[in-house]
Length: 541
Image 1: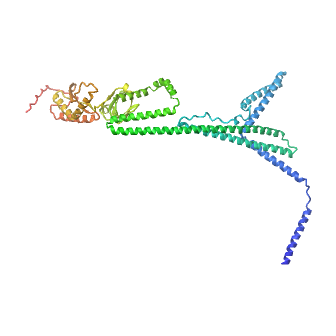
Image 2: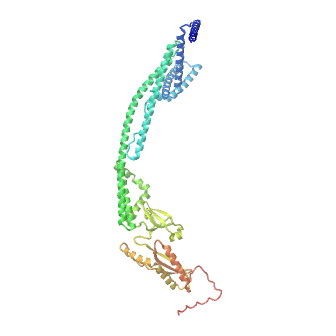
Image 3: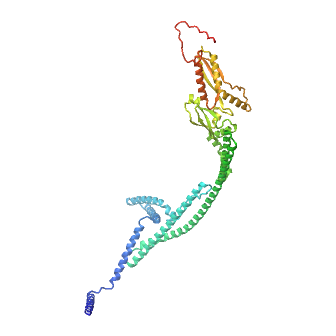
């Protein structure tokens, strides 16, 4: 074990001796070369960093550099224009030759180009950063006077905050640009200090001028941003206060409108409970609805129109134009008032309108401020004329002033006279036929006759009724093809066709059962021999 340790110690001693001998064989380097290599490395590193900065600045993404370059181009163009003008004046004062004449023409063309260039860059003449230092205009400050303008106010606040953020981004961009330029100045100075042959005096002077201009712009930008921020805060406070006031106002108006609707609902319930007549209930219901809507409109008008007198003045001046432009609308409104006050048409009445040769007959579903709504039913008119039924007809209220209107169920009357015509031959017993028709009409219309008699007695208080006969009437007339029997009877105004169909069938059956009554139709009789004598009437047993 001792021998082993001695061998290891001998090995390390031999290695140390060999290493020392190797170091003695190396030539000693001169100590002056190390600082020289270090300086070259520093110069190269500075130049590399300078190239990177110049590449970053030459990308052209900075709006500050663009504005500054435009400013410098404007100043350079002005200086060049002054030199060109001075040279042109000098040439014009000299004697002209071909060479000077060509130079003069070239200078005049250059003068024109420089003048146009200066006009394009004129906005950057006074200061290179006029447009960048001025905050963007957000438009006129909105005044919130109704709930619909709340969105406008919020949009305005959002817009000015967005513009302020853009303005702060300009400040940050300018700060980064100044850092790059200051670093570029340091590198120029460092390279000049390390390399006596380097000549960066022009670049250094131009960069220092840029830094000075940008720092002045930064100071202005910072102070303007502070003022801009305070103005935004005051604007936000004003708009938020107006929004809050409008919300409270809207809630109060909503509560008032809800109370009006509740009162209207209660009124309608009371009316429905104590008024059993459908027509009166409908009229009262419409009056309550109209009054409720009018109150709501007045509340909204006086709440959101600041100068009602001004509105009245404007409407006064515009009334003539409105009367002409909206003549039909006003006439319909006036017609509605006439219908409402006069009571000539009510909901449920069966009415007949005639317009431009067309006849419209139906039941009144609604009488609004602008029109009367009809439900067209199957009637004799639709059967013979329109051949259509079931349509909803909208009749403007102003038609009551210009068109003929017939009310089949005006007042307490719910019945109308309907007529049936039937023709029998000349040799028929027309007296007997008329008696049969009258009895059939009296049979089927007796109930309506009694009802009409009572209704007419009620109408005597309002109208002067000369003829109050309600019994069926039968008339006999001579026609080319025979004797026409015209029967008139009272029937339900809403179901005339039903009774007409029943009576018509019974009349035909009754006539066919009589041997001395023949229904006539267009015929011709030819006699080839003597005319046969008339047979004597049969004697009753």
